[in-house]
Length: 435
Length: 173
Image: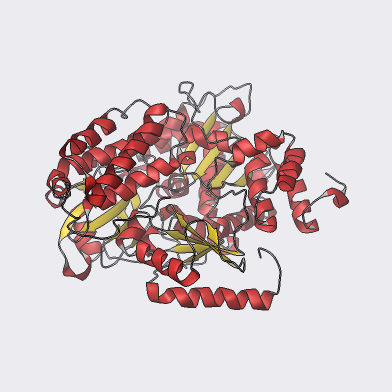
């Protein structure tokens, strides 16, 4: 069972019911659950969307797109049915927050899905979980069945004339499916290959109908925004970055864990105070601030607020909130190699710059790490990565290229120390298993 | 597929799959979860499984293979009764994921995507399984084991050996 952590600086909004048995529907209701859905049912679609816009809640999947604005793009009138699709394909290395949401607070996901459905006029929502999360899917399925039994889902939700149904769905192992158009393809029973945009899902989405797709954390936040009021929620975060975020802090820290902190919380403080600092009293070498696809930050670059805008200004991204802390005994070339091995494995091959780029980057880094690199390879890694950027249908190509650019630019000296004849200064795992 | 005698699957799974195709607005949406549930019971996607799934969903066998080949959890060859999946992605790697993987290799005497001769275990080095804050982590079939050290590896294997003995010869429980 994943361990829960706590720190006085936390502002527990989304995680307030973690560990309280709220996976049981009666307990969830006792803790104020489903009141927000009832309120939204009474207030209507326009009110919900205005609240969501005012909350400054931005997409927790990684892109940070304002949720209220996204919902407002769905046309009011549509010949085809509209859908809500919850993205629980949590696969970005360094990120395990949705794991805890499904485990401890499945009804918050259901309630958020109902509210999203009311906002856009959908009668059906899907909750897609990655295939590896089977035990969490079972928890979600139980929660959905309980919500039907109580009349919170079905033809007449909460005794009203409004219909809303939820279908839970299992994936079968694919990082790329976390991208919204690939997610829809997968849910339609196809290979998870991305679609060309436009049209955007809000207009032409699942089964060709207008579809709102949100990350599980975003959806689980929605009932709390309604319960607190948009203004109070927005007040917790930083400008244009409403509320809190579940930060998954992993790697070389004393107390790894998922911590809920206000948007804009200082990254240095997050590592050294909240997570207890670098493990074993070692020095800090680097921090990956938002999941493995976000460019690395150096110790002197981490005195920043963790919100979409401030991390962007520092040359990286807040992404999925997966903070990976790297100590000074770690080989950055090896870290880069493990990162690119992942993207090479997950590239679907649809777009050539991504298919070939990830493969060549992996080959270059493998050779480099094994001590057979040449000086020109360092520039070549950069050249390859730069030529992938913006040249693929889905963001996987960018996700692979951006961290590579960060490693090569910020740790050039360490790459140079690996040049021909010189073994890896950290001499670990030179012969890596090849996935 | 109402004729139960025609199915490869247990009555319980067959009933579940009957319901699965009806639950979506479009039948084909059942394809990926159906393949996974079928694999859970049979062990892998044999030609017969592919054929029955194709029939149930209403697509060609070729289409089923085309889709299945995209998803990393789906396999066309048998795995062990207990499939040990060791994450070595960044968060696990930093906390000893490779050492865990190496220890499993030593204990089982097999490598990536191999099966022990008794068919009890298979080993896989896998990508992030969403347990980064409890790293290093593994999954054995669908069960998570968190906060591991190499020393804990033999005990985990023993527990599954015992489980296999007490459960008898049930395939892929």
